[in-house]
Length: 68
Image (cartoon, rainbow, N blue to C red; front, top):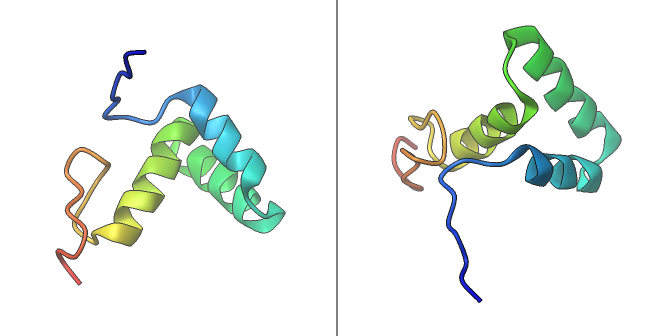
């Protein structure tokens, strides 16, 4: 079985992540995505990358531990 590595979160995977989150966090992410007019998958990616690396815009440039 070959696994394809993706550098960006897919819409399907974003939906799975949203379903696993507490309602208040899910609502906040959806509201933020609407506010900045970004797809929810990009908003989730930015939130996670930002948590790991304050200077990252997304997973591609995320280097955990930098910028803290």
